[in-house]
Amino acid sequence: MINLCSLQQTLKDCFYQVPRNAMPVLILLSLTNLTHASTSPNFILIVADDFGWSSMSTTMDNKKPSAKSDFYTTPNIDSLVNGGLRFSNGYAAAPVCSPTRYSIQFGKTPARLHRTRGMGKNRADHNQVGIPQVLKSIDKNYRAAHIGKWHIDEDPARYGYDVHDGISKNKAGGYVNDRSQWKGYAEEDPKRVDSLTKRAIAFMRESTENEQPFFLQLSHYAVHSSIVYSEASFADVGLRKKGKLHKNQGYAAMVQDMDLSVGTLLDAYRELGLTENTYIIFISDNGGMPVLPQQPNKGKPYKAGLNSPLLRGKWDLTEGGIRVPFAIVGPGIEPGGQSDTPVVSYDLLPTLAELAGSLDDLPADLDGVSLRPLLDDSQVEVKRPDEGLIFHYPHFNRVGLNEPHSAIRFGEFKLIHFPVSERNLLFNVVQDAGERNDLSQQMPELVSLLENKLGSYLKLVDAERPEKTESWVRAGQEGKTRTRLFERYDP
Image (tube, rainbow, N blue to C red; front, side, top):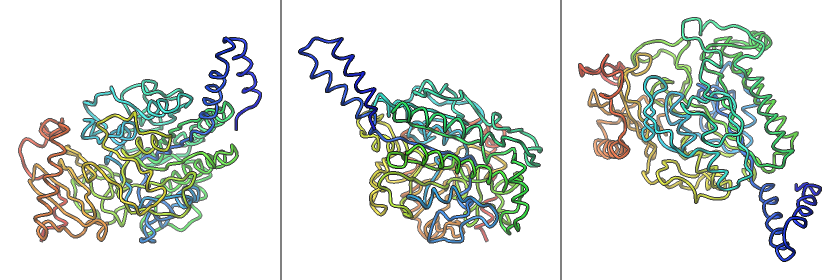
């Protein structure tokens, strides 16, 4: 609502400062600006870290009711997912964190941005247009905050963030890069979930009191290692029977702490009266850990992966590495909805822009498309200029597939291309989400079509080639097949 006292003061100031014949125009402009500021929607984007597709106590796909955790409990995240539209085929742009965070901010694939890994030399051009800049071009009254893990090598203020934590990365959340990261320990503010949430709520409250629309990105350090949890959650989890799939008590407690923080945020969202004009989006930056602790298994199939029924996890372009929780709650979105349309993190920028009122000022080279039509009709077709979702990981990584690979999701199918091995794997990921049945020999024409589409796109954006990566000198120059993933499909 418009604050009448503020409005009266604004009008009074107009009378004292302008000629009499200009009063009607200035008064109208003042009324228009105030009204616009009060009606532009708010956005809360919650980004979890390394949170797997089947790591909740609800399923991301109602057609697969068992695709959920048998140990973790996430009632608050569940309520968010069930309170709006879930995307059963929601994807992160990359199987690792930093590239996805770039894609969220700038609406482009990591391949186009030239940021495909979170380590090593960063080839990204940081002269990009980010989410706050787009929203402020639509309504100058927007405030923007980024709280938590940023993992982009440029100050958030450059992209229009009024409140932020600077260039924060994993260490700010308690990450230690040695074996101790998997042992677990208790802390009063585990993974900063409480302090981050407290600051997020303060930003929401201040924006609401000032009658300014806002964009808030709350990027949790949870549930990335190191494993850190509260004593209360650890004790509570210890009373539950461990699952066959998920059984790590410390990790389960860390999940619970993050879920409790989401509940605190949702309570504030309701208390501040934001339900009628605020969209909440929940997503993960990549798939969950495939096993705990991590194993340098070079693509060899795991006996039991933590992202079941999906294959493998973080670091890979298998479904376990890139299919993630993805849901939107907000005005006019019917609770309990599900869209099976493939969507991806680089769709968020144009989606927010259209919900805010305009697509006019978006960069011309975006890869993402607005998901606004799906919020009205979850079954509608979303048209993409390239007709598919593109993924690119041109690196050797022993804890992943240990070979460069790229992928394209096209309709029901996904092709994974291995340039060093000169091999393709093809899956119908609608019928076979676990990627058990390679169809490449049965459908050679489709393989050729998708390989050409993928190759054409990577050439168009001058994507980083495997031989130009830092890992090529160590492992790639011999030209040998390194991945053991093919053992899963070869006789």
